[in-house]
Length: 382
Image (cartoon, rainbow, N blue to C red):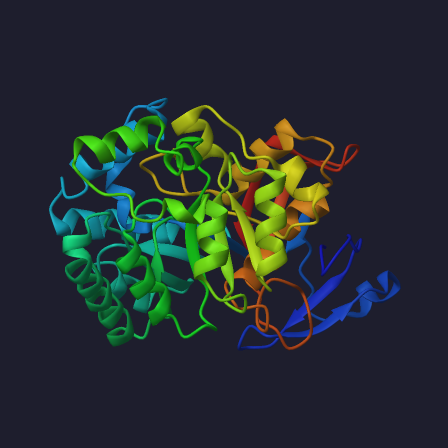
């Protein structure tokens, strides 16, 4: 069993009827005297947290070929975004919600550009924090884009869904729109920003690269290069007390990390390795993030750039690429750190008395190496 840190062999968890952890017994000698005990072979972990997902894009599975690069991927997403009727989009999102729950996900940081997933989330047993994403580089449509975001946020509120209005990235909003979105955040709500997914993001601030070329072709002014870099725009535009999730971070530098960690009080660096592999053939710099002591969480991104919304498969890839990372640390990334990022650590993410973190069984473990295997699975127990 994996509590806040480390493993406790042969531990016994007792949950009450409402799913709250009532007791955590570590004395193996008492096992035979506990009434109604159920044994599991594997590792019990708290319910997992998918820190970055686009549930509403579930209908795009197998529609975009791998290896397009971020610029090509964005172009295809824009072209295919409304390619299915809403009923089909809802059906496929509902299916993925059920699959994530079955595999042990208790919470999701979900990007929303539309409102059609809110009814299914209202009845879901997964906790969603909805990041209502706003983007638009054309200054002339800033007010319209902002209005659309607030309308989607209003629908989230109507269905009782936690939400934040958030900028998509540092490169996809004009300065007036970025200011509106950040200014609308009350400060205690987290922002989720796609960050350094491509080298083109930094090049754009120098007027170079494919993003800069597209801006020129579309006749769009870049009114924020004075910030100097993507990290510079964040630290000069967002208050330090704002909780921040930075998504992907595939090409982040040590200088970027120092600048951001030195400004913000709470930062979570969310990695989505299978999506990065799908789009760019790249892998996030987990070595650098670990060396800098960053809080790391994990997301699946969407089915437009992934074969499934399985957090376990993300961790398997990280473990295969970086076998030196202890399994207990990886488990912390998908439980405790994700819960902290979504402001739900008071009820989830760790096995602590009074919390309701759920329980998930990881099995087919390589006990000799204390590592996941290709056959490892995750199954919800509670």
